[in-house]
Picture 1 (cartoon, rainbow, N blue to C red):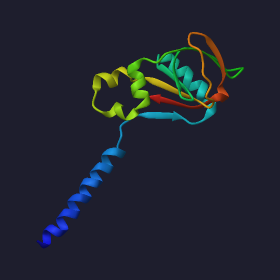
Picture 2 (cartoon, rainbow, N blue to C red):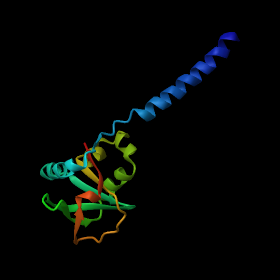
Picture 3 (cartoon, one colour):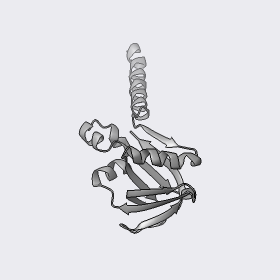
Length: 142
């Protein structure tokens, strides 16, 4: 009876510890470009590597079809479209990337996520000129 009194809390503690460990050891590989001056370089490199561009402005999420970067004026000219449904699921729920779906995970690799400071709603299939200053964060997802 005495060993059972100490064994149950120990087992409960191990279960809680393993749940905590499982939730914190995500393998979601995301690298934020923290320095705002490096955004143009990151965007150019992602373009050369043919990454899938996703831009979020407020609650709106767009696929960036084309990006023209003007370093002198510090502006981006982008053409936007709807995001592919599979990529949209993984964008909204990044924890699903680690769920073991290797084919789906491979299909959504090599993305760049741009998060805008404003919450402007943009029209699709039209060019929009955005100042680089409006980019809040850039993440490369491998």
